[in-house]
Length: 274
Ligand code: SF4
Image (cartoon, rainbow, N blue to C red):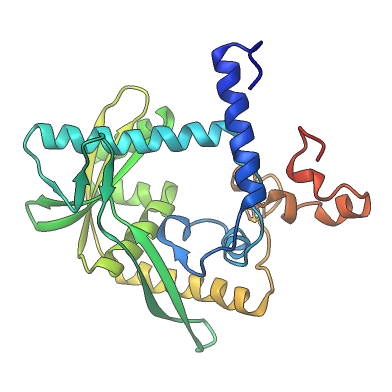
């Protein structure tokens, strides 16, 4: 490591090195759809499951991931500290937490043309918690200031407005919990939303929605079929905010042009020219 750099510069340099190495050394992908990715662009899921190499994560993505893990740990510890039990997690002596609900299960997914794909879904749950209606899965979501503020406005209007807001703005969360409930056999999820700026927490109880689950199965069945046939689903329109974070953007947009210009695979490591 370059000792002429200051600590934070060294930190970012080390993160970039690690991520570049991880991208280069990446092995094959597991053939299963993760609950947390089911709400992503279908083509992005296709690329991951088909084994394409993801571009190195940016240091911002790495920091967000670390912050997300910390949000989970802090929230569970806070609940535990005040006597609200979170089960299905084990707290280790070194301060780390193991989530015990982790599994992969196959489901039959009926496609719009009436055929069926047998799709493997996987998930890891944040824990199990008691609510007045009975036992629920726990799902913790750290949110940045503005999304949290809009959600808080909806929560103030009541559970129906909150649910409508989740459908409109955070459909990914609903896809994730619908799959996770089916894998582990729960009827409800208790969401805890955490504002990353101020630490404020909000709760919302969400019950299984069979219609949404049928829709998820249809959509994921189509992705599965696309993977089996090696035919990527249509891309989103360039400029979509999903695309700006997508690790397969380099493959999806302009790859042919870059290839013609002899720039592959440098596109994976632009800053190094490798
Ligand atoms: S770049 Fe956009 S369209 Fe392409 S896979 Fe990623 S999110 Fe989907």
